[in-house]
Image 1 (cartoon, rainbow, N blue to C red):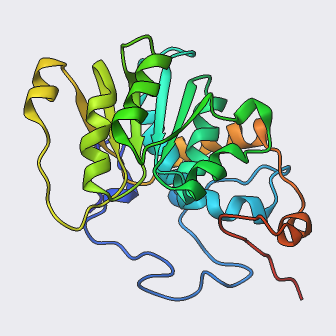
Image 2: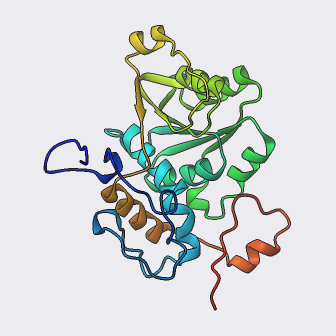
Length: 246
């Protein structure tokens, strides 16, 4: 039986006994499949399949966390996206599209460069921070926020150190969104959580309604170079999605 927030709002993501196409059974590489309408989102005519492919896992995952961690925030407040890879690269663009001042954080040169390469100037992060020296990175973030810290941080890595460090970046009343799954259990700093009234929120992909909201943002803010242009670019980073047509 599906488990949801309320009897009239059952969410198939939390069904106790479910089958996921592509995991428990085959068929999702077919041209046409039969799907439960509760799990289907209409693709806008202006969004090609090639662009939508990464949105239905990585995109929806980071979108869901951003929505949950920024509830109650106003446009212009500061959000940090920590870990700039498949999820984080989309996350910084989503956060900007929602009107937040956005900080992209990574301890790898490739991650920082990926954040700087966002094509649409309206979706580029306000600050890119190399966190390989954590104290220097924290200072840069606190300088941008006038010493307050960020209103929300979404951690897109399974690094325990990154999750612990992210808590220290939050302002009083801030929210940490967990997306990475560290292989070992770890402990939070209770002092920080209690005395700054911090919140920690998990997020499992995104609901159908949240995914529909994501698609509207993608439709209104998309800026996609052609797939050939991307393929021929020797500096390309990230995931290349190709649609094969007979």
